[in-house]
Image (cartoon, rainbow, N blue to C red):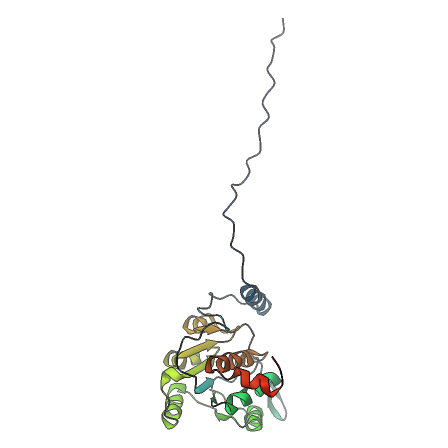
Length: 222
């Protein structure tokens, strides 16, 4: 006689345990990640988003900025006539608004550049090139203007900017700054250097100072 065999129970494949549901992400974080992926960089989350409440209470009176990698995209081109820089037109326009509304923009760079000097003069900006100690220069300027460190902002992108960023009340890093600069910053822009980062910063400061509406009214904008 044949033995009766019971049919074997079908076994289910081992499936991975579903993980926790992720919280929906804000549009700002999505845009920031896209910018960083395009630039090929990764960085910690900023402590503040560009349009959030400023980390200071007083109005900003001086805006210190680096040049290469902050006002420009960091690319330097040379030919037989000298060096070349590329500036974003909207950055320059916003700096004019800043000056018209009581904010003094000051550019402090470790490099000298004839091309950059022409742009600084075109915008009537105060600038200092070939500077190794940015803190000393900034301190002299703020004392001359009778301004406290807490009333100053600084935009930077690389290690030479860290010392000054630690002094000011509002340190700001551009989107493609090095990680060490972003760790010091209280705000990280969504825009990259040379592509509207300074415009973003100035608009944020004008809002904080309570004068952005005056800029909009000038152009009959809302």
